[in-house]
Image (tube, rainbow, N blue to C red; front, side):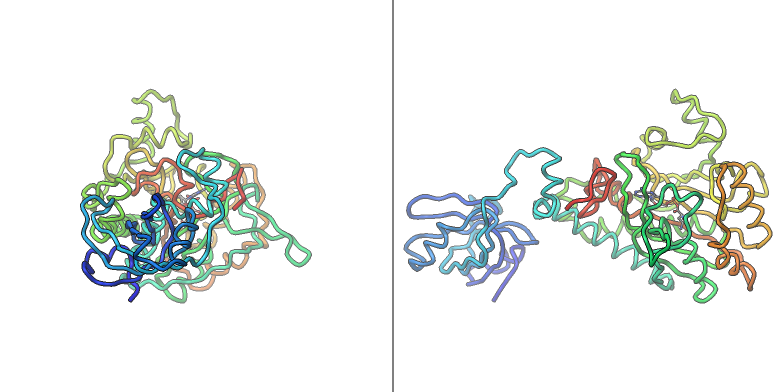
Length: 434
Ligand code: 4AD
């Protein structure tokens, strides 16, 4: 019977088989201790020369760090073993011998990134990747339970956004195409068929900014809802973020403990979240020593200052119209602003969600396109948007939606220093490999 490391404690006195990798090895002439790793943890196995065959002993001697092995033996409780349990091995089989492993104890960050394909086996990365998988699961779980349909947007598009500056371009059968920076417009088009939808796909950003929160390729969750306004959208975002955080805390205490994350903190991420306007955010930042004026955008430092003392996420609402894209409607109560809300993660982790109500009237959309062209000095190729404008011409309805950057959420929930550790193979302006 094959078991995983985690189940060894339930099999004391029983003969079991485990498949894993050599995490560490030490030994003498008559006994070799192998710490075996599988995805559930590590366990010590003792291989005594007189308890295994001659061939088995030779294999144990030959097995190097990270060799893949299969062992058979009896589980024993042993206070001296690293995890309190040990396997007395009677059979050992080496599936794949490892060449000298290039990662040793103290390595530079750069080397660990170069050897990412191997570093992903480290206990830390294993736990982060498990947590990532869970965060994806709970996000889907919440939206599925809330009766959303998952849709599949195209990732290659002909539309270059506002100027194409932040998009990766590629050759597409003789013409120019781009990797999508957001699937929002496609999510929007699908509400007229399915009403509440979400796309869960990568977005690509060619921005050169090398910061702790920017990836060139990230996973973007983009729900879009018919008949929602911005206020109802904020309530939905709160519930989604809370569901992810609380589910992670309740169902994965072992993973969080291994990463040094206090799960009780995550249990407290409950609605309502604080709401401040952009104007209030500017005042707050200026009280903290900045000298910002109306119309200034926030960078990493401003976002850090804004929520450094907060324990729960904070919405920053109603941003200046000149800072935001063409699809955001003017706020009727303050025409300097649009109906939008960004969610800032607490403890200075920065923006995790961008949301807004959407313009649903054709003429208004044309007006905003022209305004953005004027203010930002860009020129839209309207041929690329004719299909989108069509959706506003044929039975449009008020609607709203948002985009959540999954790696940013993971960075915050796990308290990671850098976004690159929230994704297995990070793509950044200075990194395309592995
Ligand atoms: O604020 P953004 O640019 O908004 C949009 O793309 C909208 N079309 C989304 C929508 O309403 N459907 O991006 C949304 C979120 C940000 O809040 C952030 O969490 C994440 O995407 N994000 C990034 N994550 C990692 N690396 C980057 N370079 C990111 N840029 C944005």
